[in-house]
Length: 158
Image: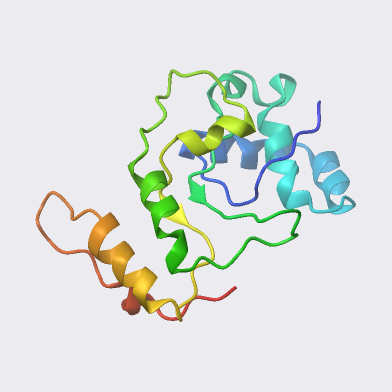
């Protein structure tokens, strides 16, 4: 098995999540190993699902795409809080072309060229930014039923 790292903010398809749980159930030695590692949530799933000996053909299906727009400034250990002046970048990320499933695995430097579905670290105090996101970037469902207002979900936390 080769060790891999990935964000723990990840979206897995149901078969991939099921395979991960099955492997961990069958291999208590892997669970013991990751209990002793630093930041296991960033390496356990990525390493298992990228190991052909453990995950089989799933290795060919798993993508390391990140559907989150996250603004990292410099060499900080936490992403920035998004503010009104980030709207242009958010808009470009929301309207970028989606990555096709048949496209090869991409390098980290190319990830920003594809559509982002979520924004990370928007403060509830950024009312103007949140209003613009609601009004200009959120698509209405095909049924015509409006999406719930973001305020219905409570306050965001860091």
